[in-house]
Image (tube, rainbow, N blue to C red; front, side, top):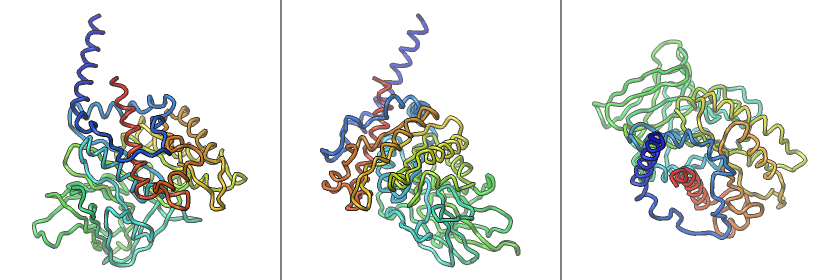
Length: 414
């Protein structure tokens, strides 16, 4: 009897704590407009798979109770994620709720001759080359997001402004740098021309990853290189993560145009670098490119094997980490036809969810199911290619994702 009373008291305390923490933030709807295409009633973590996110939810409980530490969400995907419209909106909403822990993972896509998110700017000098996991016959060393940029020019440099639009405070005091750390690699340095008293310390953690600590908050990155020893002749860069000294949440976007379910399995550094981000929840949004082919060429067992390898690598990065699988949205082929490949892919996701204890967010169902992409296009939420979304469409998707996760989390208190 005493044990039951004790549990009731603890449960009541947690409900009050959560309510006081989220009441102001959730008192208003996050949706500016309501669209007939979208099935808002189905915007949940699917078919009882929410239980597989309890490890992440427990971490949120601890954060709310203590207001201490960081929450790390890592979102892996294809071009829908590289553009950062979707993930930026979800990041904004989560940080409104749990606090701004920093900008998180960034890659200078402009230096790899591909589209850079508009919310951060990149400039650079010197001679740089790139290698992508989506290229055929890739034999280069690839980083966490399936990319690497390289130089043999010791005068090369890069500059990154993590908040080009001036909408968020993404100043940072701690930077995780992912780069090749062998003896032949140029030495990375950071500088600020306007601050003579500026200095930093490097803490090498392991091969391919170092942490840098700054004496005062920085609002931009200026990375240059130096040849400290005669044998140094190259520099390979895989990305960086910007963090501040606040307690709060980081939402890392790991996206690559054209990525298939097999793409990130090509990176030998994937598990090690994902582990460095200390994920509490990993969201996987893949499948559009696997599905975007005639049914005669669709390989369901290949996709399942690819996803198994990816899920194994994610779990190796942090045993027990919560994983959320996201189904691709509806689309039409280039010839204007509709295929059943998305339905096959969704079936695979639910099978793997039970096999690997993953949550599932069935975005295809939420957006309205098969053939709904035309309604999204008519409402200005998707582009005329019937595959990609408009900026507004991605933002709506980000809002739906945030709401699905938080509704599932809050449901435990009812």
